[in-house]
Length: 210
Image (cartoon, rainbow, N blue to C red; front, side):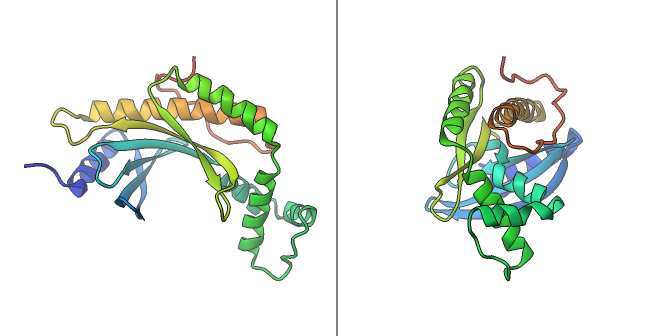
């Protein structure tokens, strides 16, 4: 009897807890193919997601960096910088809720990263990604998805298979975090973001960038 997606998600949650990871939350979203289910976890200071795409026999272990999210956190801690960003982009949001002002400042600050810098760092990362056992895709933001916003690193797992184990799951998380951290460090070092992406280097032995 084949397992249903909720049974497999339960197995994944059990595996994560057995290696001392913490469950953050679960959510779902709809696509043309159907509903995708997502579990989010913490491993130390690192966050990762396990995504169950609709109508697929594999899951994805994801490590994401969204620059707009990073800058929302930064501007929430440094509200005095929001006004200068909004004035620079000639946005009149004086009467808007503070949350909207912070999100607008983050979006326009990320959109101001020079295209040539983005091209250089994405080419560098894409070349390195050929050396590891993970996939990647670039993330986009804005109403028309026209603002380059970071990266998602993914390692596929096949938890419907009978021989899939907690060891397989743990290695996939190690690999994803290692590669994702390397990509994040490359972005932070080469884009002059003016903020620190505050994550400790992974100590587990995954296959990161060599």
